[in-house]
Image 1 (cartoon, rainbow, N blue to C red):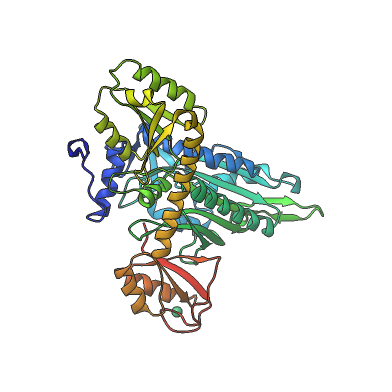
Image 2: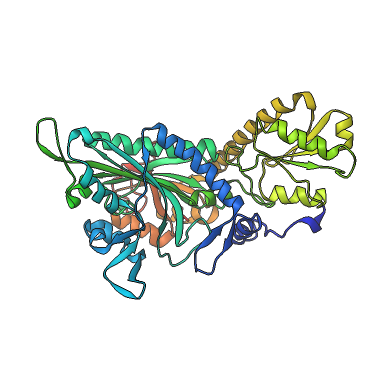
Length: 476
Ligand SMILES: [Zn+2]
């Protein structure tokens, strides 16, 4: 291979963390800024986020939600209203103490999440059962003062959506919580080609102020887990703290039942670490900003560029197509677009034009196929579908290979070393065992999956009675 064209990416098996950093910077997803732990999302990275966002936003609206926008700042007194919530977030909030040259009478928090703002608003607009349900969502940035940061995975500021809903009954709120968890699973599996495990968080791992937290967990190439979306059932906890009440059909005052759910730019990190390889990014077609990159060969020859541009225009009906007609060498372009993870490269030169054909090269397998011009649209569409499902199946196979079972703490520890991944093990439900496992192995409980298996009836840690199977893993 024309080595001089390849921008240097560290091999995954050599140093996975460095590989990740190389990919996010060299594939032009981000640049670092002068603010520690903050990233500049570059056009290619932002286009990827916009695609993910559009897919999710459509589903959020299809399930009856409306988008709103809340303020960036939260007065300290408002954040203080729900005790568990403030305790959970206090260590990582950024404070505004001064406006211009004047110290503020009350400090402001830069939102780490917007529960309290929605609650304050809901108190004002919900009065009767006729006002329910309220199904609001916002797309916004939030700030969490993290100590260690990595692009997309953990940054001081990140982009996300946060849904906040209020319902008349506990049952409705529960349905909503699971509905949105399923929406996240749908986007992850069918757009990002990332298989997920759905389940409930333990008490220790649940959201600050929630009655129950549900999660979709995915497994990265290196065997670490990544929480890829969470959905929380609040019960009436926030409603009681904020006094959000409505008059029911019998004229009685009732507290509303609330939910919240969030999905962030973290999933870009997941996409990179699930599908990427030593050449760089691999983006599933449904998420890809550019699905097909046309690279003209011998473009100085008469007719080649015209032909290539005509192709671009006609294929635009069926795919997101771009063309690189710059004077860089084809070998440079091949490497560049492989690194950027564009699902299909289309090569066309004088001979192809003469033979009424083009060459398609798929990014996932690097296979080349020669396609007659009169079958191009049809074959391209089915190739994109095939790449999409191949990536999902490959990721699923990897997860299955990296999912083990442990019956004792020693086994759990040993498996985490020899075959990092998800470890299924029984748990008694005691916090002490969960903490001990984390302390001794570095693994946290990822979730109590909906799909339970009775591996044994003894806790992996203490050996006492256990009826819950938990997924454990080291996590990002
Ligand atoms: Zn135990």
